[in-house]
Amino acid sequence: MISIIISSANDKYLTDINQNINQTIGVPFEIISVDNSKGESGICRIYNEGAKNAKFEILCYMHEDLKILTQDWGLIVIDIFKKNNKIGVLGVVGSAYKSISPSGWGAESKMNLVKFSNYIQSYKHLNKASELIYYNPTNTDLANVVTVDGMWICTTRQVARDNPFDEKLLTGFHCYDIDFCLSAGRKHDIAVTFSILMEHFSEGTYTRGWVEDTIKVHDKFMGILPLSTVAIEEDELYQIEKRAFRLFIEKLVNMDYSINFIQELLLKYYRQGKIPSMLFYKLSYYIYKYFLFKKKA
Image 1 (cartoon, rainbow, N blue to C red):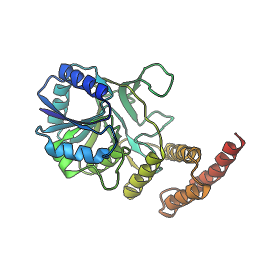
Image 2: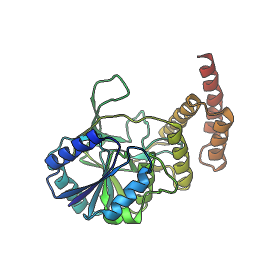
Image 3: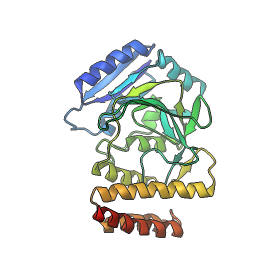
């Protein structure tokens, strides 16, 4: 009763996740996998095609480098959607705040208010031991968030039809999760469940493609951002936005974007009235400060 859609780049991973799903899901299912080992199709296009061909009512977009550890997790997913008819998107990692500042799906709050996650992260690019990434500031089984991470996203066939992934805007492999959540979130709740545990075998990486798609998605949704499902005091909101933009500036500098490009990007948000004057001036100073730091390094 669940259609699982996978964009596959690794035969070994695909074999393993097929076996894992078969052993753990606990309900009738189908796997719609597309060989994309050459990267010829963007993930939005693959997911849209998968949704059109799905025969079950619940869809699960899933990375192949996962191992689900919870038995009968399919029953849990079906039960969540059955009991919560407002929910349109379900994940295991998400954020209750999406900044106007360009960023990934998450937000960094020193007050630990906005991040919700329950999964085991293993590392392919870093020399780190596997670790449980658990944040549940409201101690709930089901958290209302704004965005979820794309490693595992469940939805309904109707929500997928009403909110297709934007394959014209996003032709690669980044930001599809943010785009989908912000689209579906206009009429539906987005949620993180703490009832399903899985292991993710690789961490994300940041490329110029990620930067370009991040800017595109934030331009698309600039009119509705920022969004939050929790109450956050003004001082903390200011700090979250400053932190997000500073991290983005650092990524741009490290990827050798010009200082003019970064300043123009900041100006665009300021002219749209999305960041206050004080933050604009502080971030402008930070651009030059970080450039000088990198040159000295």
